[in-house]
Amino acid sequence: MATRIPLSLRGASQRSSHLFLTANRLTLTRAFTTTSLLAKSRKLPPQPKASKLSRPSTTAQPHPEVTPEPTPEPKTEEPPKSSSDAQDLGTLLQQRRWPLLFSGLTALIMGAYISMLIASLSRGPDACSHVDPATGQLPVTGRPRELDSLTSNPVVNDRILREKAMAFDNGLNMPERVMGIRLLRKWLGTRVKGHVLEVAVGTGRNLQFYDWTEVVKGPVAGRELTTEEEKEEEEKAKERIRSVLDQGGKDEEKRNKDWVEKMKLPGALEGEMLTFTGVDISEGMMGVARQRLRENVPGGKQLVPKGAFLTSREGSESRIGEGKRGEEQEVLLSTLEDRIRLVRADAEAKLPEAPAYPVRFGNKEEGKYDTVVQTFGLCSVSNSLALLQNMAGVVKPDTGRIILLEHGKGWSDWINEKLDAWAPQHFSRYGCWWNRDIEKLVKEAEQKVPGLEIVKIERPGFFQAGTTVLVQLKVKSQGN
Image (cartoon, rainbow, N blue to C red):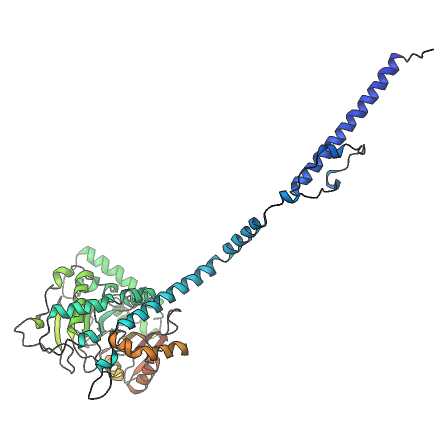
């Protein structure tokens, strides 16, 4: 006899079964979703649904505690090893980019400099062809060897001298840029002041870095000023006082009224030049310097004549000859009432005095210079002591400065040996001995020249290995 189940019980049984299946499906779905998320976070492929059909526990575990058994990752889906290596290399390059860039730049500069040096020396004339038969030594004249070869003719064409000097000058452009000499020349131009004498001015490679404003304007004394000019002079006077005090001029004896009034005058501030006198033994070299004056002095094309120097023209009786030694001097160029001059003279014999310049407040014109400058000259003269003694004799005691930019022996014995080995070839091409010990020469002069005192000796530039020397000197008053 068939047992009949009440409809109410049948419905309850179906509802229980339905609830059980629903809970089972929710548990499976949660477990599968958690497994997929974990697999993705570990870069593992999600597990197939078929492997998850086993009956799970009806109690859901908290999300952090679900740790399903990871399925071994197929080898085919493994990320390529080269990609990881490339990322590591990229990170390393990013972290070391500045040291690598510095190392590469250093190697490039040194390689370029050495290549140019070797090429230059290989093109130079044979040193033995310039040996003096009387002494058996290479003569030192302070000029490039190419210009020396032209002096056998008593009448030398100005154009030929200028062309030879220009060719020599152009050959210095790239080496000076590579080795930072141009920056040092620029720095030097900001340190001169007052009446400036440049010894061995050569082709005038420093002229573009001087401030010619006060030179062209001329002295304030002796002329009436407009209202604008008076205001401008007052502002500059205040700036000069502030600058001098910032540089350490705070001694009590220097802060009296006379000192303050003197510091207000043009030329007291570094970089302010009142007059310029350039001296060299070579007329051909100064022919290029004259062109640079035309290009860099405000209104230079009207102030500086373009033609040959007056003493170079036919019929001139004052010509002393290209490169002639001795105390005889001649002014090749004078403009702005002697505020700009080019003088041919032998710096080892005698240097010209400073030009006359109107002064105020009862100061006497001493005929001496506030700043004496020389770049790469001690290597080109036969008697460096005589040259330093002459420079000390024309600079103002105590307040004046002598600034030398030279090259010679450096820190490295290996580099010094190479300088010694290539010195004759370098002299034959450029007319200078680059293996002289500049610091030793200056210290010897300090002991022998009365009043001469070394203020500072520096060797700027890492790439030069100490072969570039910057020297500052002053002369003490003999009464002190």
